Length: 141
Image 1 (cartoon, helix red, strand yellow):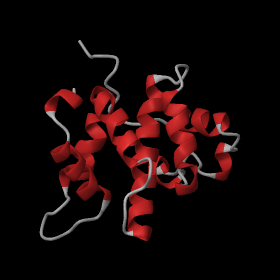
Image 2 (spheres, one colour; image 1 turned 90 degrees about the vertical axis):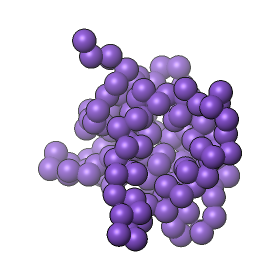
Image 3 (cartoon, one colour; image 1 turned 135 degrees about the vertical axis):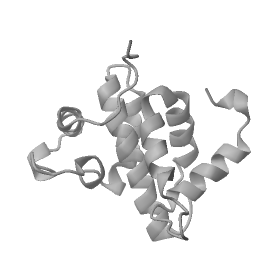
Image 4 (spheres, helix red, strand yellow; image 1 turned 45 degrees about the horizontal axis):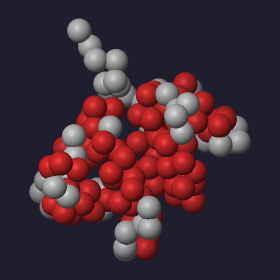
């Protein structure tokens, strides 16, 4: 039996729904052939809106799965450019770790090749690891 809170991959339907909720035409961000829409359709300047929508009780699990990608990718873009953490970063990490059943696959993907042969494609992983070290097991599921 598959746990319905485990969503392996984000869906284009969830991305389109999230973008419409934010007042954005999904066609302006991705099309049906975009293989990486969950990373290319987000914008760093929308991080706060993603977090707010994530916390909305009407947000579906599929939308949360997609928003997890948007939040991590947006934070990655932010730390890559600013070389420092984003003001909402701890709140994002806390939320995503509280819903680890939804985001486990995303975290595994991010860490899968991080640090292999000195290759570190996502600077946000370093911040995630630091956050995990600084938070007790009781803060995490």
